[in-house]
Image 1 (spheres, rainbow, N blue to C red):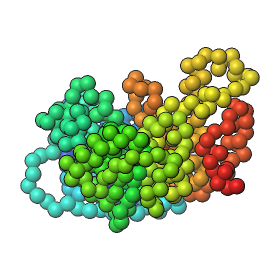
Image 2: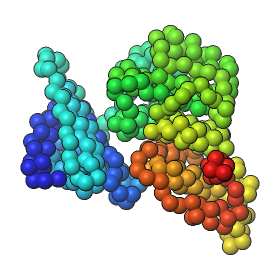
Image 3: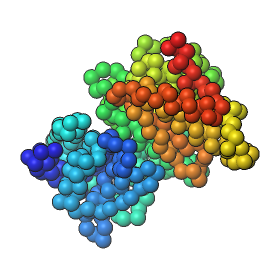
Image 4: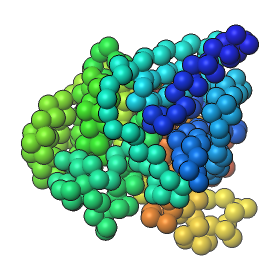
Length: 390
């Protein structure tokens, strides 16, 4: 970033660093190490307005409180060295920043028309976490699905589900630049089940953000599909449809922009990932479940004493499976991350694979084959791509 660019960026950002700020999200890391995402929000600390930055490094979060001048300079430093994308949302307007691989900064500012409104609420330090879908604001599908009361209060026994939904929407928020604002985005949710997250995705993207979207939910349980279609009609979600169908054989669309697969069991995840790549989906979000395939095959003479413990073998096989899936996606031209979906205390099935179609294919086929040979495993996803090449 040149000095004039930096100064212009800092001056622009400083206009929004006040009580009207809603959030700032800086993402899209330039490397695999270090900070992967930063979230900034206004905070009253002992009566003084500061801006709290939450840095995500691996599975850890680090916090720091900054003044206006410190925050603007901190954001400029992030975009110069570590991250390539910034989204600033304020009651006064929006700022969107993208940094190219060559370091060129492009910035779009959209000012909001001034209007009389109540002063924005700035949370005091140590108050509860601020969510995308906020407690106290009733959301119809959350009420009908038993997560919220009609007054917008979270049902105590469903709070984990509420946190999970918001965590999922944070992942969606990160990939918004990959979606189109000028044409319909086709999104497929394989194994949608009761569709808590499918409804949340539609509500967030279409109702809150205004993106032109069409979402297709697919599941093998007809009763679940019927119930979801009844709910979507009641909400007037006309671009959301649910169908009875199998992941591997679905051919109902010609192109897909994003594929979501949550808790598709065992190799069903592999078929969903394969279909997503064949469609050329720009974004893939996958939370795998019940990875039995490698667990049945896993064998290594050196590790035999470790693998005699069933629980250790099962969890190791699951982690190896997801790591190899990520490598296969890298081989197909996707920049792939493995992220924590929700805390381990709630479920051990807490890994999310996020893949964004970007850049060239990674030359790693030899390494993938060698790893599988060392583990005496033949896995579905790499085999599907090998069969296609043949």
